[in-house]
Image 1 (tube, helix red, strand yellow):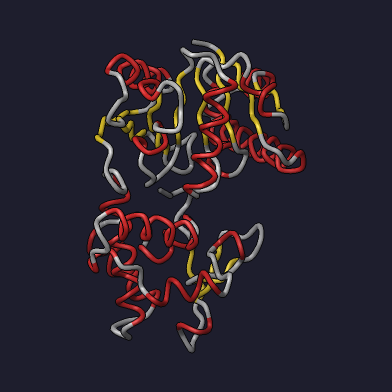
Image 2 (image 1 turned 135 degrees about the vertical axis):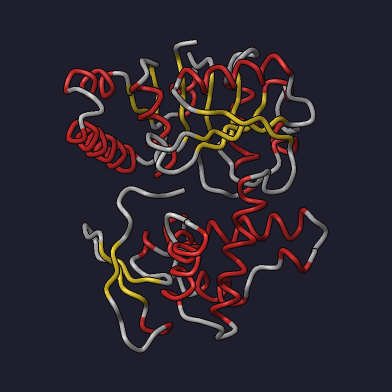
Length: 310
């Protein structure tokens, strides 16, 4: 397998493209927005330069990585030679189902169709395709070039051959794959998102403040960053979308009901780091953040842990 197509050039998409290209694969990075593709290439270049500065790659590897990536705004052209397609579009069920239906028509019958979804059912995605046995989940963690875990999710009809292929492919990327069965939130987000949601409830109910809640989890539980800061980095809209999948997927179980504060923040477009404001405020290009005014009267500057993330 040498030819990989990645659909979506956002944070996860460009990270997945970067990783495959760095390990010698031919990558077609596909996005309808040409400007988004240009920003993705700039991000990949910046991240490669950081790797050079840390001494983990050479200038030669940076150049070969960039040469391995071709960009496309036309889906059909982008996937025509793909042996594996990794979808990294918005975490929206309707968008993903529509996209996989198209991919099933455009790709060869033996092409593996993988989704980077963090919560949506692989079985449901596979049901709209011609070959559901070839559909699987490849849930990379952010930032993709650095994080070792790949959650490999088997749908009900995913074949063992496809599963074994994707597990081995993940190892070829120097990742550690973990095989899980299809269920709402899989393993990672079934555990992580209720914890984040409970931290938001703890704030919402006035039990403690943003910095205090995060400090308890960092110092008491040895987490690299607190749950509220992590939620900001994931994106509060993404957190809400995953909580809604868990809530409906487990039969409207109140255990998974998203906190009203989370809903209100998403409605107010305070989505975290990507919008400059969430539980913390963010300055473009800065590694510093401050607790948002609405959560604390005295704003204290605290330092983001270097290169830590989900």
